[in-house]
Structures are given as structure tokens and as C-alpha cells.
Length: 437
Ligand SMILES: CSC[C@H]1O[C@@H](n2cnc3c(O)ncnc32)[C@H](O)[C@@H]1O
Ligand SMILES: [Zn+2]
Image (cartoon, rainbow, N blue to C red; front, top):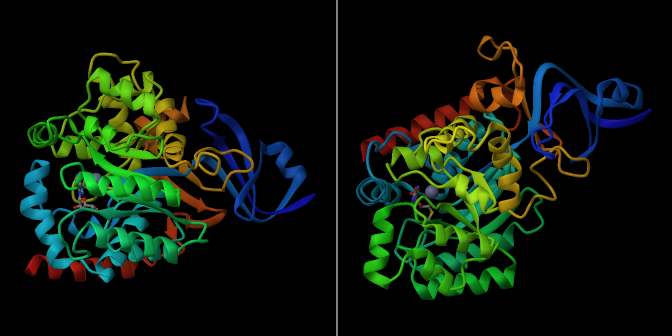
């Protein structure tokens, strides 16, 4: 008998790679931060003894979900401005509120609140993009959630920086302070083609190459963005970014709602990856991204929630369902089937982040980032196909347990690293200040 840290016995294990596989009555053995074995429960019980053993008799065990595009701290601005188009929402509501209220403390508290919500929804990795990068990283370390800190860069002053040089230097020093933290990594996050100059994009390309950092940017989110670029630059944003050298496999393009067939070919040729944000794209009336066409072109696509002020949930189960449904509204019911959508929400995100060797599937040798979903609820009975239920029927409240790097962060729906009561009290406190101003 080999002693390991944790043994999880599940009714179903859905490893995600290979796509669509459901393993009945299987177990996952974890030692330290890694998955060391995936095997039938009958064999696991004879081969391993464990310090922590979990019987998940009616659960599906899946890789932790990867939220490929978020602005975590915007939980504290949720519900402040709804039913608006993107630029009206940003210019007249969100940017003024961010200018008035953002601080290191606001971003730390808002990000912890978001992480609590995400962990309770089975999300184990967030690819964030916001201001006060140290606060985001500290929240990730506090929650022990896998965090990719998108160090935002734009041209105009905010509560965090004065100009592009200032944001860039803050990005680099934040990244230097957290080097060596296994759960925290950085990307450079130029906000969007309409807020970042050619010169700054060129600096981002050079720095990303020098420091081996990914790049995360909102691109082709609205028709207005494209019209503005044609007027100002004489070309569509994607063409402009291509000429500036941005289009590489290191780029995560968030939204990419409006694309021509030639642009999909270009994205595929350049190896750009996409963060699909179905709820935010619908709520801001931005449009429907051509995800099936992108998948047909072999583009890596992951799924994101965007911020809680434009979604208004941080619920990857809701996003999976919407992604599958939006895939079909063009008339093809076979577009984006459940198994492919689950793959997008896990391995697709991991691929986009360049982390597919570490996370995104239940594979021995990878990090033990896992979520257990209790399918015994009446809403998910009977169960012919757990992948169908995960995408089409289950809700985030059915997530019972979550592990990141082998550590249990949610146990029977109780958070272990974050204090739920404190988070609620702080959210109320911030809410009163925001409502007053
Ligand atoms: C530069 S960091 C984040 C910056 O982006 C704003 N934001 C939030 N959601 C969106 C979106 O869908 N498109 C563009 N910008 C967005 C957020 O409020 C911050 O100012
Ligand atoms: Zn966004």
C-alpha cells in the first residue's frame, strides 16, 4: 500500500482529455500538489491509503474550471449600471465609478469576494485583468486560487496610474514581486485597441517577448469599436494589431465577437486564442461570436465570465450553457456539443494560458485542480449522461468540493481559505460607500 495525501472516489470521473470520456466508479490519487493516479475505485482501494479520503457516491469529478476572462474586483460594482451598451456603460458609469472608488483595499476585497464566488462555482483558475495588480495577486495567494494577474495598460489616468509608461512599470514591478509563487503568474493586459496607442502596443510586444509573458486584450467586442478604428486608423482593429506584431499564440483575445471569415483564418494562422464571454456579450448587446467557425479553424477557445458588473454572475456553469446554446442559434443543433463546451471551459482555457501541461484535465502528472459536482439533486435525476447534465442542467450550487494544487478550498460547500461572513460584511461596507458617492 502506498500512502498518499488524498484519495477521491467518485461515481464518475470526467477527465476531459480524451474528450467525452466518462469513467464510472473511478478514483483520483493526489500527492502534494499533483494528481498521481486515475484508476478504477476497486483497484485504488487496494493500492493506496490516504490521509484524506473522500467518497463522492453521486458526484461527477471534473478538472477545475478555467475562467479565461474576468475583472474580479468588479464584484463590488455589480448591479451599479445595467441594460446599457459597452461604451455608454464604460464612459458614463463604470470608468467614473472606478476613478472615484478604486484603491488597493477595494481591489483586494472585491477580488477575494469574486474568488469566493468562483470557487463556489467550481472555478479554480482565473485569468484576470484589472488595476492594483499587487492586490489581485495577494487575493490569489489568500484564497489559494490559481490566478493569472492581467496587468492593465491604457493611455489615460485612472485611480491606479497616470499614463502607459506608468502602468507598464507598475506591471513589471508587480510581476517581479511575485516571481516564484506557483499559484500566481502575470500577463500584460493592454485594455483594448481603442484605449491603447500604436507605440504602447509596440512596447507590449517587446516586453512580452523579453519577459516571456502572455498578452490579454479586449478585441473586436463591438461594431462601434471596428467603425472607430476604420475612421481613426483606416483599418479594422485586428489588422492594425497584426501590423503591430500582436497576433501570436501568446495573445488571448477577449470577446472577438465580430469577425470576417478572413479574420478567422488570420487568427488561426497566427495561433491567437480566444476568450468567449457569452453572457457579457449578450447583456451588453455586443453580438454573438462565431465560435463554431473558430473551432472548425482549430482556434483554441476558452470561456470567461467577464466582470460581475457586465454579467452579472461569475458562474462558469451558466457560461457553458449559454456557450452551447449560442453555438446552435445559427441553425445547427450539432454545433458546440456539451463535451466540447466542457473542454473549452477547462482544457481550452488552459491551452490559451499556455498551461495545458499543468491544468485543464484530470491527467496523472498535472496539478490537482478539481471540482466535484453533486448530481443527486432532483434537478439532475435521472442521469443518463453526466456531461449533458454538467452543461445543460446542473447549477453552480451543486458544486460540493474544490481542490487547487491538491488543497481543499471548498469542502461540502464551505470555503476553507476565505471567510464568507467577513466577505459579505466588507461587500456591504463598500456598497454603502459606492452608493453614497
Ligand atoms: C484595463 S483593466 C479593466 C478595465 O476594463 C473595463 N472593462 C470591464 N469589462 C469590459 C468590457 O467588456 N470591455 C471593455 N472594458 C471592460 C473595466 O471596467 C476596467 O476599466
Ligand atoms: Zn472584459
